[in-house]
Amino acid sequence: AQSVTQLDSHVSVSEGTPVLLRCNYSSSYSPSLFWYVQHPNKGLQLLLKYTSAATLVKGINGFEAEFKKSETSFHLTKPSAHMSDAAEYFCVVSVPTGANSKLTFGKGITLSVRP
Amino acid sequence: ETGVTQTPRHLVMGMTNKKSLKCEQHLGHNAMYWYKQSAKKPLELMFVYNFKEQTENNSVPSRFSPECPNSSHLFLHLHTLQPEDSALYLCASSQEGLAVEQFFGPGTRLTVL
Image (tube, rainbow over all chains, first blue to last red; front, side, top):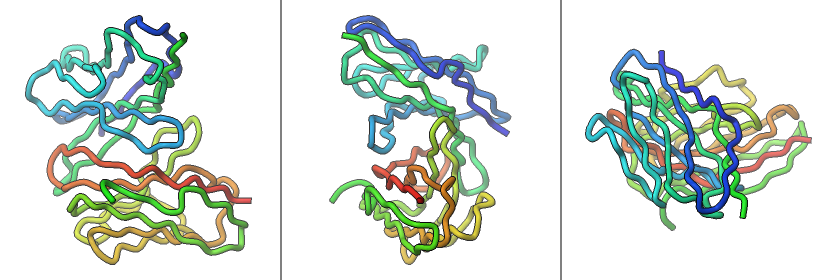
């Protein structure tokens, strides 16, 4: 079975400062990992994904994440926060289950950006 | 239309009403999903369809009835819901295979009175 832990439920940063959103996973298989973002009253949008290629993954809007197998982590970072980054962020692990892949979502982190 | 669309965006219904949620994907995918998103809880997978066939039902109460007439359309029929069913219902699609991402619609905000 797989699981995702997002220990922080809420992160607040000032505009222009770095963002760090933490994610740890557990999986019996080599996982694929995703970060999704959800702005208010919107669906989930894929930020980036890791699928066993390069461990440092670059996504949209300046976000990136690094897969660290030894630490079972996949933390999301951005050098400089913008007001438009305020949203909910979900870390997701995917493992193959027969012909399908099953996604397991973390509880999400609400990112607030202060002016 | 592009991506995954859902209608209606908002729905208020009484416990005795019957309503349906609609999802349409314009991505040529062969798998579609219904998720329930409640406040302070992780996303809950409800149903999975592959090539119009239901492949997963995560112990969802029978008052939720999915229908997938083709690979592009997915419905969720609602009947005699409870107030605790109020949530954001998200539809997603993917080109099924290993470790592929899912593409989400904007969701239907459902309120059951």
